[in-house]
Length: 433
Ligand code: DLL
Figure 1: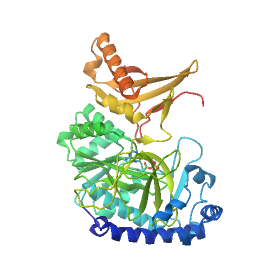
Figure 2: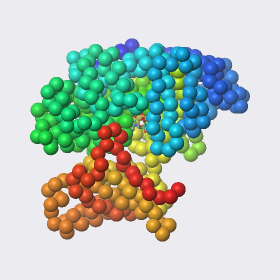
Figure 3: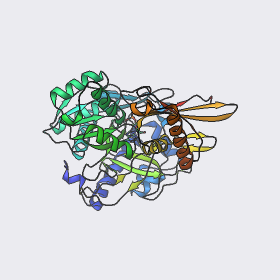
Figure 4: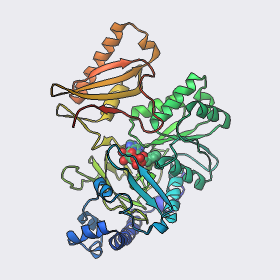
């Protein structure tokens, strides 16, 4: 369902006029209120007046995660703290968290965008939403929550964890939409099975999954195990939280970016050159309606491409393809670039391999080693050792053939790899940097 026909199906020309107007207003505001941006503009001899077209945006330097760290915690805010009504933070793997703030109007914009996202993903006001994204500093739980209420659906704020109780709630309340990370959704199905509950008997129609990379094969697996239609939702705290882009359930082919609020670009991560539609590179966002924490040309480190083709759902907003990984997730194993998602695709091609895996990287005698731990089904695991070894060799061969990197594959018993309540931990890198 399209919640906001006006903006979402607007002819490109009209949409672009609105985008430009909003961009200019944002540039004026950051120049006036955020010393970091004013300094950047001045150093590059740019004034807000120089930005007269969408093309002119390219003249402005990028903003990086380090810039946010340097201005920790509130230095990038464009409004006085009096006007900030909510603060979130993303943990990050190193150093201080990234802190983001929202005015009352920002919270309202976010709720509207999340309501539009949920509608695109198949939800209506008659639905009951089982929201298993974590509530707290992470934007997932509260982001979905406010959107669900704005849509008029009933939301169960169950958050992550206490999985057995979640299964009881799913059985007794009969929710129709599941929102969770894809890895936690799979874990829910696993625990349901353990306690003898079949998703066949639950009422779920759609699942809205994101916050971590997942493959097309993983989607098939989730749809089969959870007996629902799975759509991909994308977002990041620095840009807003969930609801920056989402797949429509009609096509399930790329995520529509809410261009009336965010301008996407794809750049070559090495050179910073802006790449044409269709080419793969790093995704960059400029927010054009946010008040408390606007970002200009923010480098997300997420790798994807943009697709401007019209969509069967009628939306005119551009689509981004599934995020295949992050520039900082890329492992370099003996000189070969490897993304966890590529390994996932190879694993998911194999029968009887479960979608639980972990990559362990080590360095022995100055040589990188990659070990892929992957769970197999009960039946295979109880097979003879010889069969398991054959299977390990076959997977290692496929990884070598597809990715050009040698890996040691270790099939492990079901349920050995730690389950996460939020984002799955796919890589353990033990190398000293
Ligand atoms: O993960 C926001 C979110 C919550 C999105 C719930 C979707 C659902 P952060 O914690 O700041 O925000 O992490 C943002 O997660 O830069 C991507 O690397 C990754 N990510 C988010 N959605 C997807 C997705 C939330 N659908 C970072 N596919 C982003 C792949 C995703 N990666």
